[in-house]
Image (cartoon, rainbow, N blue to C red; front, side):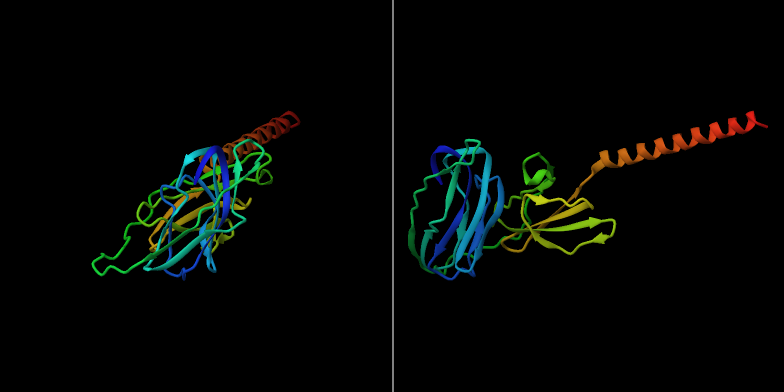
Length: 234
């Protein structure tokens, strides 16, 4: 992406004239800091939605594609869009460039492997009036310098038990009954990194403890006053 004006959001699709089953998408080093929709294949089109809240200007990498030998014809979907960092989300004009090439097999090339899991990452919660209907969301982003992040999965823990792993994207809406979550980042070779996030944290449990302590004190005072009242009338 090359822009001489500040933009903070982009979305669209990339079409290509080759089977995509062996295509790997690498998002490491991307200028995108928040992916609403991680780049992934839907049929023969790669779709994506993301942005940089503080805005981006200049030359930047959105993602890389690792392909097997073959003939390729890459072109952007006409619906691909970018939005100005002007506080109003104004849609800006976009110019597309297509790419055609043929990649031959080289027998001497070593196999491309990734045996390392994604890097450690720190999920964080975010809540602001006017965004996501004012509800809290979980924001997370993992990095994988070798093959890139393929997808995320989330498991919720509530007082009723835990859910199965399910595909998720950041930002992730936090339900009221969730106490803890595990977030799994999976790279393009299936390596995993799992991080844990406590929704309420120590502040929540401290608040509960103080509430319980206050209740004990109130009950103690009531008991004390009742005892004095009995002594006064006997």
